[in-house]
Figure: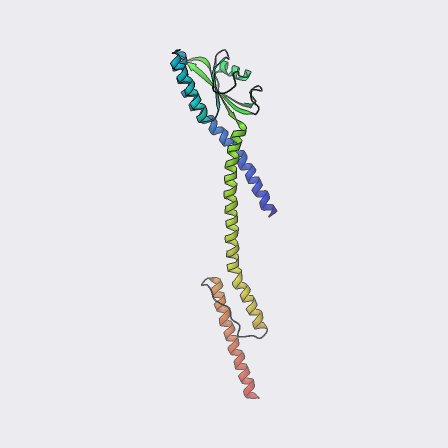
Length: 239
């Protein structure tokens, strides 16, 4: 039992790390396509147009994507100024500013320079207009929330594994009983015959190897019983 617990715990820990890595990887991949879409809309509604209706439509658009991706979104211009956001954070760390200059996708985990009470997964995507770097799109996803999702997946996996393990034990137990019961009966019958009770027989309940063994045992017991009766008659006649 202890070995099974250790093995099960090891599997759970390994699966937790695997699921966490997979969850973060999928989040980054999905946000990449969202970033490209937001980039197109930013260019259309913020760079090429500046009217109030465009600004309102753009804000609603960002809010929709924020809810869909379960993350806060910040739109940063080339100088590092946050000109639109969906949460309460209105500034970005220096590494995001460096990303704007380098034009590379940057992923890191931090409290966003004390902007959050918890650690977040930040993904900063460069934003371009006519082949010119104009800023960055930053997504901040709560790491505790992501781990909570992973924990739920692990719990579902654990419960399913535990249920399968219990069912396996039950099946193995009944299969073992099914095999061992005839053998126990054969052992008791053999002991009874050894004590001289040649009328002892076992019940044949199957046609497999155990059933064939039981039939052979009964045949042997019958032969012994007939031989014993013949011996007794011979002794009786001689007397």
